[in-house]
Image (tube, rainbow, N blue to C red; front, side, top):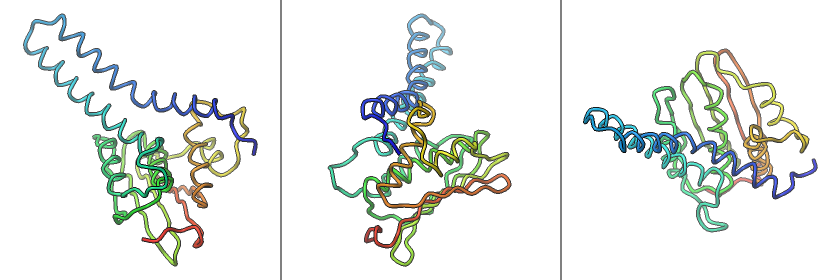
Length: 218
């Protein structure tokens, strides 16, 4: 597969991150505009509540993106999966998604944590109407395995998304919508993990299994 030019890759990934945080930031701006011109105390209280909620959402999304896409920690350093769990719980703390994190706490490589969180993003996208997102990270016979199951009404992953995860994607087909999926495949390759997507009624399961030689020590 011909790699995506570095500048294009950086630009598309930055666009994806901006897309994730622009909504709550925009809501903060709207709330501030209401405060500037509103004298009614009840409306000002509503605006303040919106600003507080949106600021917390923006902070949660930035912390998540830092771990899922950025260079969190020093190069070569391991990351506590408890940090990944907290970031995921904060960003998925909505009425629509119930996060069940059953992964045992451990130290993992930065790319492994990125891969796990990106699988969470993909899983959550499969249940737009809400549901349960179950995350598991385990070791068996010396190999690490990640499993993210998304269960909800009409849970599904688009055929285009499944194809990107299963097969190399032409560079010209990568855009702002597919860059996160492409990034996930690069992480899997870096972690020497095999990606797999399976579907059942109202459920989508994503797994990434490392070969024993590539696994990390607990």
